[in-house]
Structures are given as C-alpha cells and as structure tokens.
Image (cartoon, rainbow, N blue to C red; front, side, top):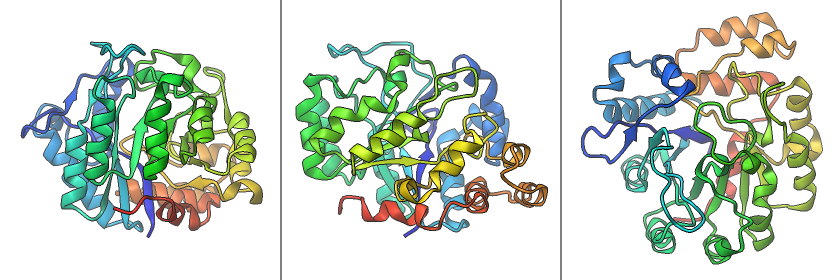
Length: 323
C-alpha cells in the first residue's frame, strides 16, 4: 500500500464537525493561496470548508498514484500542568472528525492529536485507539509538548504497547504560532524512542535557510541510535527554502534511505521550482509537474523525480498498528 503519511485536514465548523480556523500571522495572509492551491475558491474559507476540503482531498487521493493518506487531527496547546493555552492556535481539528473520515473512507487513515498534559489525555488515548487511530500527530514547538517530560512516561508506555506511531513536527515552523522554539529539535523524541514508541520526525528536522536552526544532522545522528526513528519528506517540494540540496541527497543515501517516508504536507503549496533552481531537477521536470493539477500527485511525482524510491511510500504500511 502506497501512503502519504502527512495530509492536513482543515475546517471551519460547518456541518457540526467541531473544527475551527482562526489563522494568525503569516497564515492569515497565506490562507487564500492554500485553498486555491487545492482547487477551491477563496469563498470556501467562509463557506462549507469542511465538506469541500474533505471531498477534495478524497478525490485527490483516489486520482493519485497513492492508495491512502494519513489525515491529521490538530489539538490545542496546553501548559505542562494541564491548562489550555487559549487564543494561541490557528486551527483545531477534533479527533472524532478524522476518525469518522477514516471510518467512512478506506483511503483515509486517522492520525489523532492528544496533548499528553490534558486532564483527560489517557482516557482520550484509549478512546482513539478503540476508534481505529494509527498515528498520533503533534507539533511540539507549537503545542508546547516536551515528550522528554517524565510526567508523560505512562502515556508513552501505552503508545508503545498499542503500536501507535508518534508523528512529530521537527525543524522550522512558519505557518503556525510557535510557543516553544526549543522543542523543534528531533531530540524532543528521545524519551519516546527509549520507551519503544515508533516515531516519525516530520521534515527530518530541516530548518529554513538563514532564518531558523537546522536539525537535520541531529536527526541523522539519532537514526543511528534508534532503530524506531523515521523521518518524512513532507514540505520538501514547497517554496519554503526548508531543504538544502545536500540534505535531500543525504536522505537518499543507502544508510538513511530506509528511514524516509513519503509525505506531502498538503495544503502547503507544492512546486518543484526550488528543486530546479538548486540544480536538483531539470527545467523539463519543473514544467511537466506544473501541469499536474492534483497537488498530492504533483508532490509524489516531484519526489520520485528527485530520486526518492517507491518504497518511501510503501514503508509506512509495514509500521502501522493493526486495526
């Protein structure tokens, strides 16, 4: 099974989904470009965003070279002591929404989002496991989650026991408010890996050139220590200066290639222009991929043209818990 391990779901709450969307900072100005990038009109932001977006993602997956995509929930930030940090998140996607999408459509796999400091975190984890969750998604630097905090040990032990994978953002983040920049490093996953949780470091710790710290070498070093650590190549085919040519080439070297998973990060706009500018792809490939209207397929074809093997898309299937 070929899987996109990193597909965002967004919504504004139409139809009683429980989603909300309040873009802040750069995201506020980029939102119209993101919806247009997935073939939706700007009016969708204030219309039936939930229904239109989910239907469009389902269509894209069905019409792509992939068989399924992991759809991501998004929890709110919390303090270590369990209090919600209000008015800081840009969007919220309830676990029930992605679990429901995955239940109705075989092309969707559910990645729930649970802040481990929530007062109901353990109960919510059990509920989501029973509901068919295969991954837990988080942004440690945006949601204020330090997985090395000893108070989260029991939560991580239950994840390891159940086989629930931890997909954590690492590296730069410029589309959501960052509360704890020190938690952008892959080292935030150390305790989880020691406990036995299979972890995916989203973006492999890469940082925006000049602007943010780059933790790619930290990720590489950690793969030598932890056989359960993987990285995804999401957002690398975007106009964000996240990936250096040397890092992309390094991901495909024999000792690291087996740890890389395919992910798109849609609705982040997909383009090969930087890959061409960096000399990683010929002009012809950029032109050809520009003609692919489906961003999920465009991203997959760009990654294949870069040299990522077909097994980057099939690898996740062998790691997922059975539901």
